[in-house]
Structure formats: C-alpha cells, structure tokens
Figure 1 (cartoon, rainbow, N blue to C red):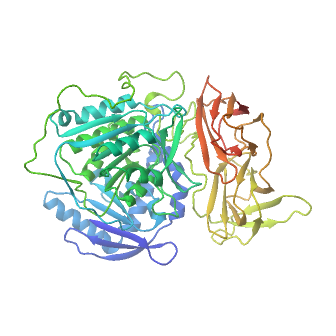
Figure 2: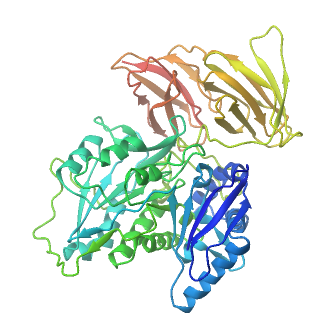
Figure 3: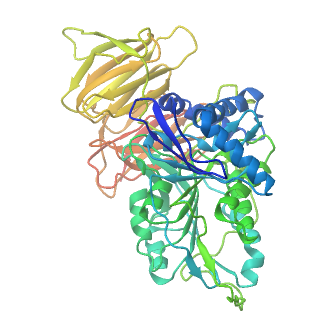
Length: 628
C-alpha cells in the first residue's frame, strides 16, 4: 500500500492520498496534524527509547504509553475515513492471499519527514505497523532507477570509523556478527565482504575509485548539525581524531565510485534525523536524492547492542533472499532480542527512491565462484580488532554505549520516569519548531539589556514584541519558575522564520547568537526571564566555567599548531563529559570530543578559526586554556 502525505495549503492540515492499495481503490482525504507539537516531544521520546535498552533502567508502562500515544496520533490522523477503510480492506485481502501489506509513505513536506512514522500504532489491532509488516519512506518524489543486473558476488564494503576523540564502540562485536550473518554466502562466493578499518575520507575515496561496490555499510558515530542544517558522519582524521563529514559532501564522495552503491547502511545515530525546513537535510535523505537506491539509517540515538542486533537481523534476512524492506523488519525483530522491553526497534528507518525495493536482478544462470585462500585485509590497514570483548574501566557499560556523539545516562537512575541526564552533542541546538506563546516586552531604559517577561496566557497568538540586533549578541535565560519545570524558550527570526529552541533550562544560561536581524521571543512559563546582551563577550585564556551555565564567551583561538585544552575540574556524578568547539563567526561546529573520568585534558583543534567558543556543556566544571 502506497500513501502520499503532503501539505493541504492550510497551516496544520495535510492531504492524504492512497496511490496504491490491494483491491481498495485510491481515496483521498485531509487531516489535521500538529507537527510542531509532535516534534516538541521528540527528545523526551528519544530518551525513553534509548533508556529502554539499558538493563539497569526498566521501561515503565507509562513510557511505552508515550510511544504508543504518538503512534496512535499519527495513525488516527493519516488513516482516517476512506483511507482507513482502504487500509483495512488491503490487510484483509492480503491475509486471504497469505500475503502481507507493505506500507510505503511518500512524504512531501519537510516537517513530515522529521516525524517518527515508524511508531505508527493501530490501537484497534493493538499492533505497531512496522513490527508486523515492512514500512518504508520515500522522501519527496525521487524516481526509481532500473534494477541492476548482478553477477555474483554481491560486493559489500564495511567501514569502521571510531575516532579517538569519541566514545569507543563495540566494532569487534559488530564485525563478528556481520561476518556470522553473511558467513555461508561469503564461503560459497555469493557475497564478497571487505573491511575498511579506521575509515577516513582519503581511504574511502581510494576504495571507491579502485573497485565497484554494491553495498556500503558504515559503523560509527552520526549527528545532525543544526547550524548547517544537515546530517554529519564522523570519519577518522589523519591524527586519529574525528573528521566531521556533512551529508552533502558524503554524497559527493560516493559519486566518485566506479559504480555507485545501490544500498547504504548507516549504523550510526541520527543519520535519518531531519530538520523541518529542508526535505533532504538528513544524511539518509541526502543520499537518496543523490541517486542511492536505498538507505537504512537511524532517526534517534541508538545503543551499541541494538545497532549490532539490527545489523545481524538485517543481513541474515538479506542472506536468506528477503527483499530490502523485509530485511528492515527483520532488523527490528533482531533488536527485540536484545531485551523484550526495548523500544529501539522504532529507531531504524528505510528511505528509498521510487517504490521498487528490488535493488539487484541476479542472472538466472549466474554461478558464484567460491573464494580461494584466506581473506586479506586491504593494503595499508591495521590488523583487525580483537574479537574479545572487554568492558571499559569507567563510563557506560559495553552494551549501553551509543552511536550519537555523546549520550550519558545519569548515575543511579532506575527508571525512565526518573530524572536523567542526557548530554548530547547531537542534541539539536536549533530545531525549527513553533511554540504557542506570547511575550510581554519591557524596555529597560539606560541599560544595555532588554528584559523580556514571557507569558503563555495568550497561547496560540504570535507575540508582537520584537527586538533588533545589528551584530552578534548573547541570549541569557534565567529560570525563575516556582516549581520543578525547566524553561523552554524559542527564538524566531522574523525576517527568515528560522527558529532556535532552548529546552530544559535550569538556573541561568548564556547562549551565543551569531545572526543579526529582528527576533521574537516565546517561552513556556512566565517565570522564564530572558535578557539580550550585546556582543559575544570576551574571555581570555585561561579561564574556568561551571557546568550548566551555557556557552562560554568568545575567546581568541591559539595560533597553529596550538590547541584549545579543556581540563575537567569536577565531573559532578557524570561518567564522562562532552564538549563542542564552535566558530564565533557563524556558529559552525569546529571540533568535538569527550573526557571520561580520570582522563584529560581534551585537546580541541581550532582548524584555522580566529575566534571560537565552547558550546553549552552539561555535567562538568572546566578550565579552558591554550596548549602550544
């Protein structure tokens, strides 16, 4: 069954068209969908999904209910009226034939692509659709490309990128399970599997130029850079540190291939995450637009154990002759084997071009040639990592690691419902969502600041209060709420419509704002006080800063080959802390890394920038200095 969901020309309403069904016609209807409200729940939902796989923190029924509630809302909105009748009829007809119903969603609006459609829940049938049948996405109207005639073997290039400045991953475990899943097909010559260890831009470029690959499998870290508004993958730089590659550049690199891969599997966090402004901002969507037929990726952070279980289930299904969409469902079922309470099966996303999931057409008379001799690692690569698992001395347990740039659960947390700390480098710093609130503007004469007391009693009507900034400035948020709620403040550039939310603010925090123009401010509570300060501040190295106070003031970057040294003075119950270095001129991410307990200092590379700052960091008190 194929369904197209797109804008209806009225804010908050969308047109739903059945493009193909199983004997049930092609009805069209419209629905109301609060995209902004759903996106506002994204981070809380992600935290619950991730925590559900951590053995020390059992998921309570209330938190699965939150996922169920989101899935029910999406299902009831899209599958309404005649569309629901068409769906029920299609399911019934398919079951009578002994078949299933594959659900293809064609999403034609950026906000829609950012929603967790894999959570679709049919309350009447008491099922999550993606766990029963294949569910896949078509972003925009990307046309299908012809099926590729294939003479065995199917060539798979597996990349491992685990930079020294990011949390280590169980790459040995994933390698072992991938080789186990494909072992029989490799031995009989149907599949050729090759590993590229310590994957860098240069080494992948060379492999793409030298040989043709049908499948590219990436094991590593991912993020979404909301400054550039696109997905990011962390490759290994020349010095072993993270080399951040944006999605558009990665797509350009794959165009260098003698023959572009038909399938790309991104077993890394947030590789399917999207903004609400650009339909193809995410890494997966960007690759599909560039010509890749199918991309399997992750819309949330994912734990190491779940990522490995997904890969094993996915490739075992492919090895048994299943189609790519069926293999995706098998990957979800594999994740369920991690722990029965896990919700991480909702994290994988399959994006395709067109509606044809047949990527390869194996010639009927094709006969594989079994490999001879022992497999050899590519020239110049280090020896394969040991298959022996060892637990880290500190920080999260082996299975609790994630492939986001940093996800750290709070010490002592026993349930998802309790307080958690999720320090997330990939946490959106500028997610384009709308908050229904209004602001009361109070001009303070004779001061360099403007105080904004925000009130939500006029919710639903945009605030008419504005402020103009002619240069870079700082936003200060102070939480004066009487109670235990955090402040959420949304800043809207009235010239461009761009929005930047600041969520769960406690105490007082300062944030760097590089954009000039006219802005509107909105908050979730009248106890949230906001101050606009001129300039970016001026810090002088060395200096110290407490945790939870927001971005540092701007400081002069050490001249090359100097680095910015971050020494943790207090971890404050965190197992490790993550840091981002940003360019003061445009806010772009320059370098990043983590400091586990007992280690440090972290050395961040300014990469030629003249002025930089450390972005809001949770948990750790630090001293920042220049290191020659």
